[in-house]
Length: 458
Ligand SMILES: Cc1cc2nc3c(=O)[nH]c(=O)nc-3n(C[C@H](O)[C@H](O)[C@H](O)COP(=O)(O)O)c2cc1C
Image (cartoon, rainbow, N blue to C red):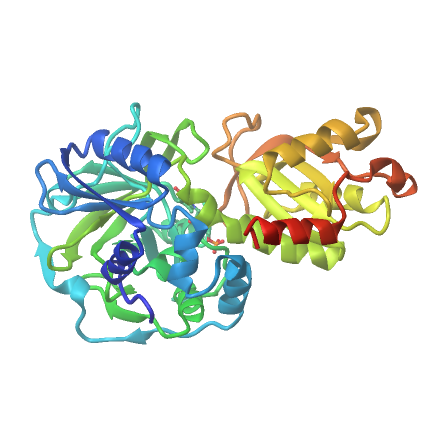
């Protein structure tokens, strides 16, 4: 693997001036999160907080907060990220089990105190307490033994207690079945894996597909795993921290409020687990993600953009690109061959259970840069006839972390937490019969090329 662990990636980031060191002492309560947010916004770099009050463990944030750093972790150019993701996902590589592992250099058992071992940050003003924001939870299907994992927000509720927002499969599905049998679910919580495994962990995987295999596919080499000390779960051997424990069967407690990636505080009733063992590397680094920052869009892009694009192209082939600038908003670019195609895109996205995040859909032509908010506004302002081009439909699957959704929570057959919402689709494409009226002004292409060369822009 190019970067077998977080620390080798941090070294590479530092060599490329992609890592900002913050030496000042910061409290784990708000100050560290504020420093990650501000430094990330100002510098665009990953941020290493070297001195957290009361700890000898540094904190890294905004790790994959840019496509530049994601591309570096995958060993590809920025423009090839989507292809690399599809290639990696479609060519999974099985992990290898090793007998001894850096993540088990230190093993803590008995009198567990999570906050003593790791500087878990309290992020936003009204958060109920410290939260792990980018750790992934690993568990096994209680019937088939198939492994599953995903990033889930985790509130530290007590010295050895965590409350986990298990709102999406496969974990929510495993838990529902463990609870039905009245059994605890064995879990491992992994913090600070190598960057590719981190990137793979929240991606969409069909039932039964192991995301460790996807991580191996993306890295082009098998991931090294080690068996946990007290539960039947395997974890990346080179991660920084692992918390091992068991859920309390059928127990639900209030979890939150927590400032979510949608930018709002949300509270749920969620399962509780007791941590029995903590393992970590010598001189560990704690990995945090600042919610509602630049990193989530990078982690969510494969699911919301690349997967959606591949699926849409199977139905409406002239679709060119999909861009989601914020949860709930999806832009689709099409080189349309028929005036019916934008409506078909909107209809399909409305109906897709796997696309609750597509609440506001805008379809634009190939001459509109869908990553440029000004160009989208231009298309909306000049190509839409509202009485003809806007479709609204009620009672569709909504995103649970969208506070505007109106329906009550519901659980799908894979134990996905959903709500209901209305959706709007806007066809901002030009009618094929009126293309001449909508020609975008420009200079001749050869002149642009010559001038770009003269100005040293090519
Ligand atoms: C930063 C981040 C935080 C997330 N937090 C949660 C969470 O708190 N609860 C949850 O159910 N899903 C959360 N997710 C989504 C899950 O990780 C993701 O849906 C799950 O791994 C999907 O697995 P599947 O598509 O294989 O079913 C989060 C994703 C990201 C990128």
